Length: 227
Image 1: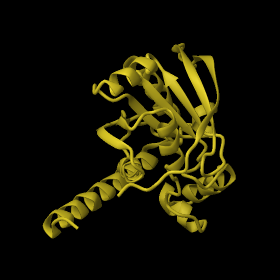
Image 2: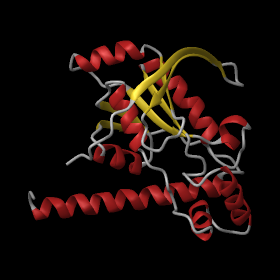
Image 3: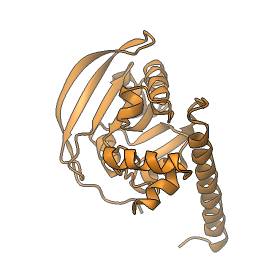
């Protein structure tokens, strides 16, 4: 049974024009919220014909395309090549603009451990650890991100069903548990460079591990029958 969510409300909304370094431009409707469980300043960006996408969903049509994107100051703002966050954000904005939907910008730097700790993890990665091992070496979880606030934001925006723009199975699992109907998981592109090859390899290995665990759990549940 899905987890019960505390009710959140829209705090304010404003239209903002965006332009990326490569010249791509669009206009977004930015929503802020009150009542999010973690008290952080998460944002929802309505992209393209997001209102039409909500109307189509309400009429039983295709759900909107949605990406929960965790904040990455180094990648999103400074263009760091150590990760693929900046290119993923740029891709997501264009794809969601074309389809109509929402980008949820979540203040979960460094997989939830914060900016300073992420920089500490960078130093450990320079010493040979991968991105997940470095978090653990700092006494943190491999991935501490929680998508409860994202589910609250979707509920507040009347988006109970989505097409999830993500290659991360954990996002789909968490959102489903929180009551969001993930109709489809749409994979993101791969943005490989010499600087992020090890990072992407670790991400791919972790995703494959999660997929295998999900398949095993699903198979076990099927064999066990309904409970």
